[in-house]
Amino acid sequence: MGRGKDLNSTCSSESVTDIVDRSQQSICPTLGSRNHISSKASLWSGFFTSTFSVFEHNKESSVSEKKAVHSRHNVWTTVRRVMTSGSMRRIQERILGSRRSGVYSSGGDIWLLGVCHKISQDQASDDAVTSDSVAGFELDFSSRILMTYRKGFNGIQDSKYTSDVNWGCMLRSSQMLVAQALLFHRLGRSWRKTSQKPLDKEYVEILHLFGDSETSAFSIHNLLQAGRPYDLAAGSWVGPYAICRSWETLVRLKRETPTPQDQQLPMAIYIVSGDEDGERGGAPVLCIDVASRHCFQFSKGQLDWTPILLLVPLVLGLEKINPRYIPSLRATFTFPQSLGILGGKAGASTYIVGVQDENAFYLDPHEVQQVVNIDKDDLEADTSSYHCNVIRHIPLESIDPSLAIGFYCRDKDDFDDFCYRASKLAGDSYGAPLFTVAETHSSNSVRHGNALNDGSRLVVDNADVHVPDEEGAQEDDWQLL
Image (cartoon, rainbow, N blue to C red):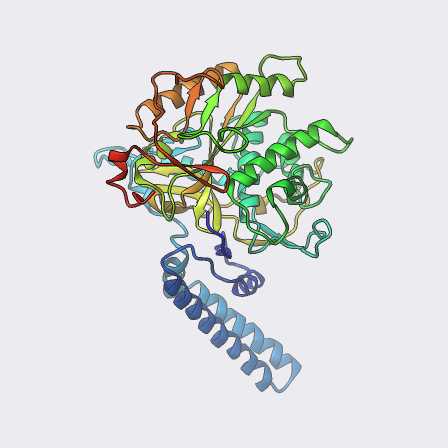
């Protein structure tokens, strides 16, 4: 992913405070050209300038404190009406992309983290069945844990940063992926959020782990500390490879130097990205013996196998994703082990959780919210800021080529099923596998058919850039590789 400031799209726009916060944040290069973005930023700037000038005019022209208060109330009422009007929504959608997608109600089936929501296209089909499927998808989507920018937390390390606005989107996206892994591990894939209290204790404990303080095991404070060897620092943007390695380090540190208040990640973690120096060519190879070793070490020699989190950082092109990889990316969401993708637009990371036809659905971390630290024993806590009902989508072909795929395997049988699916996918990839599976680190053979090629590779951010075979490369836009 390229570097850049983050586009702050939102899950809701009811609050005037939120509108002010977002108006002060720069717009990221997430849509169109830089000139196009510049013009859009100017449009927003002009709108907010004119809007707030109206507010100042009313304030200065008031003849009494009571009239001033009344005037300001009227002006903000006008702002709300303008912001929620049809014309303004159309402007926002052109700049930020669709907020609530209508694409899923009329398209093909939706795959959301390994679960298929069947959306019928047959006119003769039962509308009630289709409606139930759409409702099921919406509930499933809104039950995924959302992590966004926060403001008002204690300073990070020795810096003065009390907010991660404009630089923490990859950190938040990665927190979402790991949170889903914990959710699946502790509550199962069928869990759905509810408004009923008391809340599930396991659910509350998961949210507590991601609080914005050093006392929460998987806070951005601790993630940044663990990621220093990979140049993670407050105020700096980070790529998928570095964030994956940072999680590996954080989990190891929590396991090696536990403290009474710490909760460890209840699973091994394996970063599938070639060797440490990134010297292996071709697609990354998931080695079964390496996964087994991670599980054995995680259990301190007590078990041959444990739950395992697989993270696969990839770079699938330069300026844009090579279209040859899109079918395979789409297919990963059909895996029961799917945890989605860390990716999005250049410099603006999101958490992609589902696909339908040529579109991907994602959770957006770019909303600014006040810090919330949930106590692990507070079963009456307000957790609304950790979920989103607004369904956004992006064309798969528009995803930045720098990304990371996640998978969670509960046990050895689940891992074996994953390996079978991944190997079959590699074999059906027409010479452009995302990654392959081998029995051992030194094995030259790939399970269920050899899907490796002798293509070259460019190292970007220590991750593999896959270059297809010469014949196929001539047909692609990035043939200069």
